[in-house]
Image (tube, rainbow, N blue to C red; front, side, top):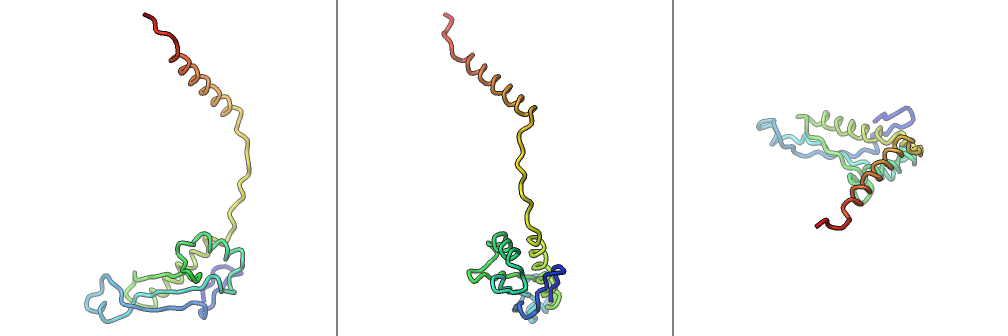
Length: 139
């Protein structure tokens, strides 16, 4: 069970793990033991996640989703299965925490008087430069 916040907990029944052989260090043991963990989590069908959080998750991590709406997370950084499975759960928890709070609305502001004055000054200077280019030849 993953406890993301006080309101969101994901039961283990919604997480599907598969294990395979991992690359990297481990000597001869790496060729015998399936320590790489791959976790599938169906975001669209999960009743544990509120709809607003689900929508933010789907838009934020749409490149990480399969066509069925599942997120697939891999971990092979540790040498044993349980730690890799735990790392997958931690990655999912971090992803959910990233979209838990809605983004702040942008408050529209007006340009300051100083910035307006500077902009107009620069426009005038550029205009003078260009006006100086036109003109007859003195021969």
